[in-house]
Length: 99
Image (cartoon, rainbow, N blue to C red; front, top):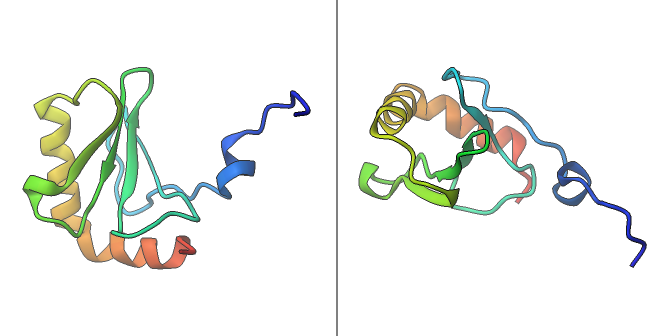
């Protein structure tokens, strides 16, 4: 092993950001070489990261990747953003993710 650090972009490809909505304090992105079901990642820096499976039922939509569970406030904002932008999210997924 070379001891050289490989950053996320080199390891997983480009990191397209979710463009159809923004929530202050959150970073939302797609991994360009991710897997089904369609989803994006949302992170509150230093606190948590979740997978948002936007084609799933609301009860199955969120999956914690690391950290504490997000507050109800952030989950409500994300649910609303997904409801309001589901078609755009799917179009972004199809344009940005090379499965």
